[in-house]
Length: 180
Image 1 (tube, rainbow, N blue to C red):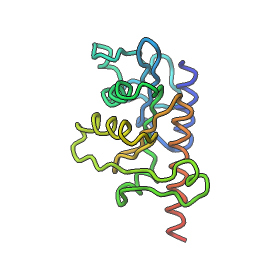
Image 2: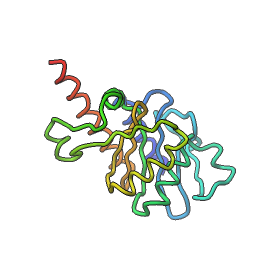
Image 3: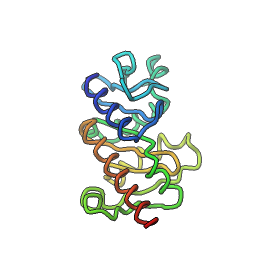
C-alpha cells in the first residue's frame, strides 16, 4: 500500500499539482481506509505518513488529513469508490475563481473529462457534505472546489490522479490559449 501512496504522491508533487504540504489522498480497503496524515508532504511519503482509520470516528482520525471527514463521507455514500485524490492544481484553481465550469479545449480533455463543475462552497465546514453529495448525485468522478482544489474519485489512486493531471493540463491549455 505505501509504495502506491509514495508513487502517486511523488507524481503529484513532481507535476506541480501539490506543494510541499498540500493535498491528500486515501484508499479504501476491506477493513478501513488508508489516508495521508495531516500536514504531510505527498512527496517522499513513508509508512509513518499514512494512517489506517475506521469509517467511524476514533482517536486515529486526529492524525489523519484535515479533510478526513470528506473522504469518509464519500466512501460511505458511494461504495464503488476505492480511492480519493485531492490536489491544489494551480491552473485549475485559477480557472475556478472565475468560472462555474471548466470545459477543456484540448482533445484528451474533451474526450476524458468533458466538462468539470466548480462548486462554490462558502462555508468550508460544509465541504465534507457538499462534495460527497455532489459525487453521489452527479455520478461524476472529478470536481473543483472554487479557489481551493480538485477532488477526484476512482477505483485506485493512479486512476484518480490521472483525472487530476488531465484536468490540470486542460486548464493550462485554456489559460495559455486565452493569452495567445
